[in-house]
Length: 373
Ligand code: SAM
Ligand code: SF4
Image 1 (cartoon, rainbow, N blue to C red):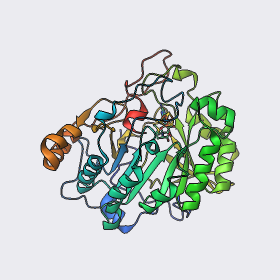
Image 2 (image 1 turned 180 degrees about the vertical axis):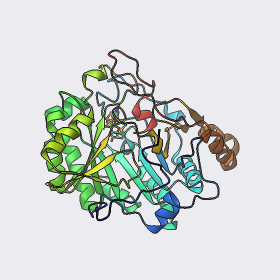
Image 3 (image 1 turned 135 degrees about the vertical axis):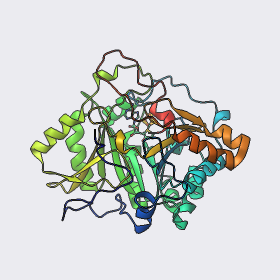
Image 4 (image 1 turned 120 degrees about the horizontal axis):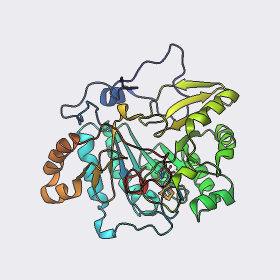
């Protein structure tokens, strides 16, 4: 079967189709980006066994979190001992190694990245590659609870857009989903991010019977505030107290229902992620759908992930991995670089997510918060 798209090519759009709404949350590709991510590969590009070039790295800076979203982790989540966590300098050294091998975009994530002290300093260390042209973009995914006090420092470090998780704007529903969160704090964080000049994309996991009625209001709110919205299907990662089949809401159905009410114009994906984007013409909004369950997007995969303990995971939904911390500590940058080549041969072709069998075990035992969503 033909891949839906190939990650090191950017398909030209239909003539006259607007590529994106101009605005802070959408980064136009520069000629530098096209050289790095879409054009000629660096001499030692990271290419996996299926010919996919790796240009995108997600770094989980901690697996800890101040919330306990029901679809993500159990109430009594076991976190990694602090002794196993990479130092910020080690994370920066690993990021350097990936940038040298052609990675053009890095996202800091977690767990909740902003519960770890010094993350803006880490962003500054990695952000120096933005100034040299080694990196096109540095971004961050956060639950927003600590965003207000970090927004300016993140901007100063070179970050220009952040993804903020907001599954509900209703205080009671938000508290129920997160088990403890206060939605006002997140809304304050979003306002502070916007004031600091950061573009904001809202991530909303679509949950049957919990927030499905809020999807359209959320879209209208995002349109009014100038934020993009990405809807995400709940994925079977790690054990939680609930059966995910009870909350699974296939986004193909949500998109069909939306298309019956609005004009959805497909946009070319230039954000380097698996989301498919549409312009909602009547609202002037942009909406993305991340559909790992209903529409597989692995053929275009350009990414790998690192845990806070320095384990490289080659696929979100598989266990193939490589111990970068061990290599870095035992053999320094040369050993790390050699391990990257070896690891590429182990990147799986695709994930094997299924969520249709009640009571089935998760696809992998580790939670999204460990690998970094
Ligand atoms: N704590 C930050 C946050 O919530 O944005 C960053 C890490 S979180 C793991 C990244 C994203 O993954 C969030 O948008 C969250 O909603 C999503 N997520 C977590 N567990 C998920 C799951 N099992 N299925 C789908 N999305 C999930
Ligand atoms: Fe924490 Fe993010 Fe998981 Fe929610 S989704 S529990 S905020 S890591």
